[in-house]
Image (cartoon, rainbow, N blue to C red; front, side, top):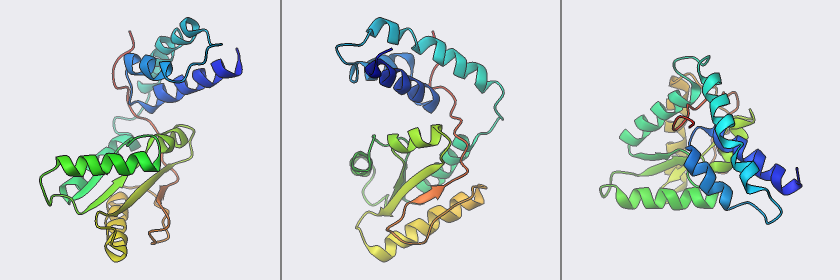
Length: 189
């Protein structure tokens, strides 16, 4: 396997274990990163078996995973006026763009703050390194941003998460012991 093919194979594994993508999604994303020296057919043949492997693993997972609990926290934050997005783009910049789009689509004044994790955070979590959450006030007010962080941290702690945050807007909220287990978006073919 070439270095390029190994990169694609590693990406397929990440996308499968993230739990966010279907077989079709993964094929489309794969098309964006394959190089000319890649055996596309061979790489695409990895997707189905990886999805089935994950489905087998899911059977042994507890009924409620950390991902389920975080989704519930995000729903509660939404109800409190904090736009909370999972897998918001791939980078911090993408996450901010996704927040801006979600806020624009919401009823005026519904959101005052935001919280998100992006694709690089998912990759880190899949590898067992916890989840990092970005947060802030939509008007970029420092004191209100700290308050948004405090609300998020309290909700996370009430959901049973160990939280690492220094209380400043300069540091993202970290869930260092997060066990990434997100059930598949769809069944493998």
